[in-house]
Length: 281
Image (cartoon, rainbow, N blue to C red):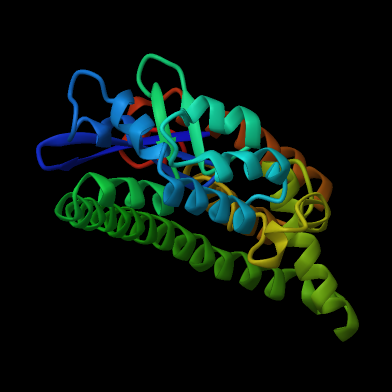
């Protein structure tokens, strides 16, 4: 999903979009520092420079395995001459570049670039302007990181605290009937009762489907706030059902019904927007 943000630099609103966790700063907005009416002109003038084309090519070589080096070579040779002309769309189309993108739409149209490239463009416009841009961009990143950390940590901690209640119920009401070798297996199975009821898959199934994410977390680390709220409630409910000697099959049915009911209530509750972490805002 795309996430849109805006920072203000020298009284200019600069849009930032995040696509697949990669940020792109609007070159179109930055160019208004030099030409408010025709921002595409400063971008084209900048891209005519030989040093700029060399820098863009170097960036793509490092970061883009699909960069078309064959098309880049003549651009590098011709750049800087009086007849050389370059535009973002031409650069992207011919070289398969990813450091610069062109967007069309009501709210996020224009030319955007990776911060490494956007900062270079801002420096060409004005070294002072570049410093203000970096400062505001860093401020945005710190604010986002702080908000995400507080929100995620609080809810993940709550989930872990409730998990202690859940495992304590297993220990007191199920573990005594099993051997020592079965203890770990039973804990994993009971955790998966919640996983299946809420996510429709076991922890192992999630790991198999998401091998890259599994390197740094588990299914519960990568869920959203609404699912975490329901997870907390299901763990408490499951601990009560275990104490009441309800079979695992029956518990799974009840927990799944509860999860679906809670999901309908929370998704239709406008107040949840005050708490939910949004992937798109």
